[in-house]
Image 1 (cartoon, rainbow, N blue to C red):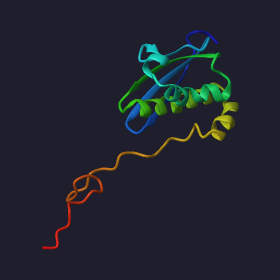
Image 2 (cartoon, rainbow, N blue to C red):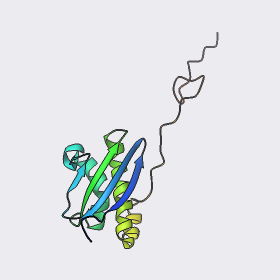
Image 3 (cartoon, one colour):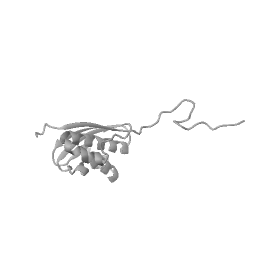
Image 4 (cartoon, rainbow, N blue to C red):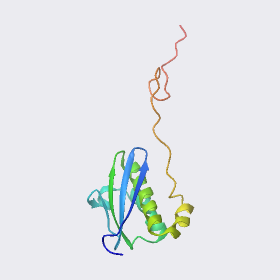
Length: 131
């Protein structure tokens, strides 16, 4: 594998979109041009974003360049995790069973519900008055 070879994947969660390029390397992960520890401050967010690499034991075999936009921190971490899992499957198809066991290849379908007319929010109705 040359340095030009990479595996590309897209991950989504709520309104976040993460685009990942996975290169062979020593385990350096850059998110929007910064180290992943800077952008994903909390350890729980780092764990959810990097879980595919940790579950498959490939954290020290790949470098990743991530561009993520939209949503909040938790949503972005979920999108990064899905994109990394999809890129890992492209790099080695035998990792699919491990990632599937951990549920890392399934996109989370939960989205914000739209506001309906006649209501204050998606489900909140105005107070009912009898008289």
